Length: 145
Image (cartoon, rainbow, N blue to C red):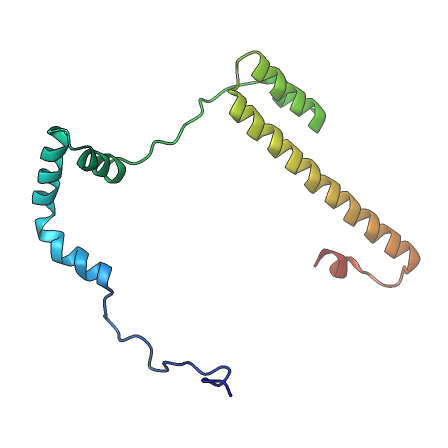
């Protein structure tokens, strides 16, 4: 026999309101000493303590994320097909206008767009075939949802 019945909580009253876990309690206990602790850590780092230095850098400075520059590729705006868009991106990478990693992301986005368009086309064809086979029944809702 199971210890608890299905659908029944093992603790029906739940966690008491306002209760704190150990991490929260620890943070609150050192909160007023935080400026002094940071000063000591900084001093040790300046004295060559690599662990203190690592702590300051890892926790104090956010990791910088690369930001791509804005670029303009007229061929991309004029491309009428996904293939032409991909070729415009590759051309931009080859000419140095687009960083290779950004070019790769753009090509993947174009590929994802192609898959979405392909899926839309398949759904459209299925709806058309079903309506041709059973003209009195609208199966659009069943196929799309």
